Length: 166
Length: 174
Image (cartoon, rainbow over all chains, first blue to last red; front, side, top):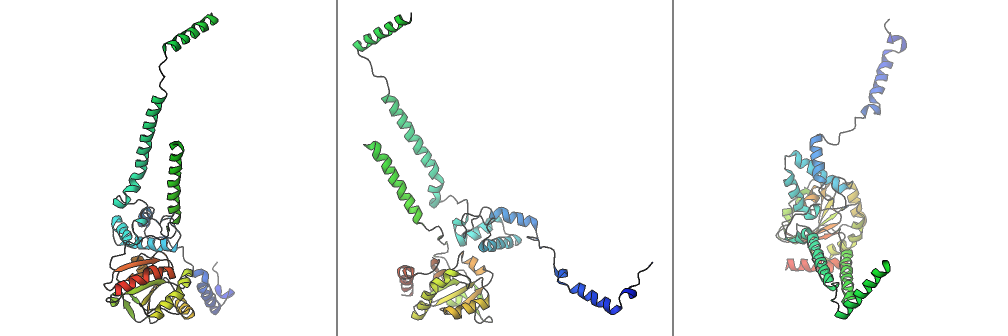
């Protein structure tokens, strides 16, 4: 049995119906856009920006921050990756503009020697102080030598003690 | 006696470190661009989109580049000072309208006054990235050779103008 449309609605109505259906805003909705065209590149971008500081909210990484600034820099990193720049080139690009502060791992150079060596300097200083303190203390609690009389007195006391126990 | 003096001395040193640390401004990250040539840009004027300004056009004069936006609250704070400075004619101020919408920016300028010789637009913040902008407002002092000599992070204040920016401009113009 074939459905005869002409019985339910005429041609004009059908066309109108089609127009309404096609023009309805629901049809314009698209599938959610993917975060990035290229998931591999996106992973690389996130991995790199994990180690970079967002200068607006300074305790957040560029990867984790929702600040507009972080968004712009992620876009910049993404674009440079698409242009086949290496990670080092991108990091150098950012350091040239924002300084070493953008790096969570600051480079070892004269200005950061204290930062890198500081904890070890404190550790060694502490260990040194402890060493000398213990050495001095051992000297202080060394048993003072007994005089002849004190010796005899002590022996007498010990003997007495033994006698009591027996 | 040293038994008590030593810990006291250590405590005072610690307090000193903490006091310095508390008074540092971590938001003010020193720019690596100071002493380096200002990044070159070319962009549309805010008022006349069909005209362009290139940063090289300003070679030979000392100028200020002020990064501003209509959405930026602390820009309002410094704005009267910029208007005053522009009136004094000491130094031309060029605006970088950062990540803004043209109509809102124009409205903002007509409301609060326009201290800028011209403003160029940076709708996507790309010029901003080249200049290491991470917060608005920021103001750069650029010398006759196109070298950045100073960066003011945050609003320009009377104090920063009198102590740093104006003397520097005088020196650079001299």
